[in-house]
Length: 128
Image (cartoon, rainbow, N blue to C red; front, side, top):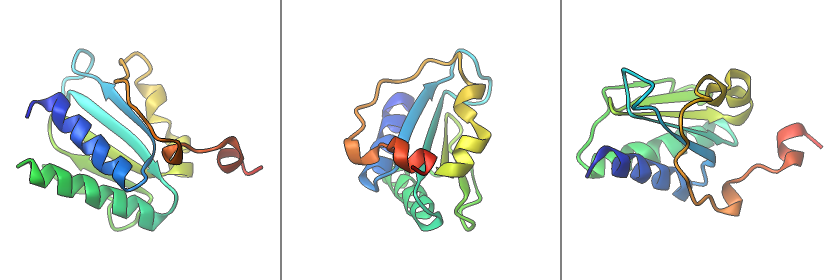
């Protein structure tokens, strides 16, 4: 499996656990440390942990183990580093605060088919 396929497998695993608003960035031409960055959210600390676990399980099933895992116990922001793929799973308000997508504004986004139940409504996002 090539790096893009692995990144897509990680994304699919996250979506199976209802990960929210996934963004897959192709950073291989603008980054020296990784090829793809997956950023997504969870609705709670437990949801963040469940999504991170699902990604780890999918990657392990593909024969890939993380170089490092940070923040999994806290459930606010989990970082899974697979070398060529880096996955950030945030509790959604924390994601908005750090705005990693804004830091990578020039990186191409990989087109994803995101189901409606993995989208955040304006009411949820802004507390209407």
